[in-house]
Amino acid sequence: MEIRILGPGCPRCEELVNHVMTAVAELELPADVQHIRDLKQIANYGPVSTPALVINGVINVMGKVPSVEQLKRMMV
Image 1 (cartoon, rainbow, N blue to C red):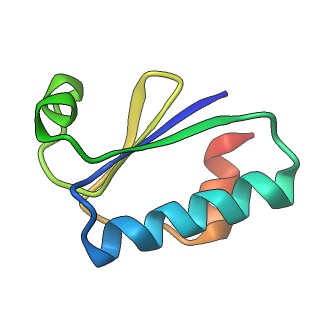
Image 2: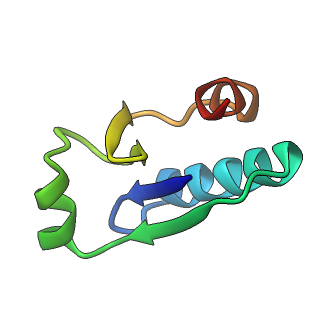
């Protein structure tokens, strides 16, 4: 599974990183997780707002931080 967290490093972005890492660990998923902070790279994905979450190339979340449980449902 490929997971990309898009955001410049704001507190909500970091919260999303923490939630994603917790969800991946609890599900014991093999995942390539990267936090992309570069604005040009973020623009390539096309999000309207950050933080944004991309799972396997598809934007799943924009502008909010889902709970760990919500993230787990997205990942399975």
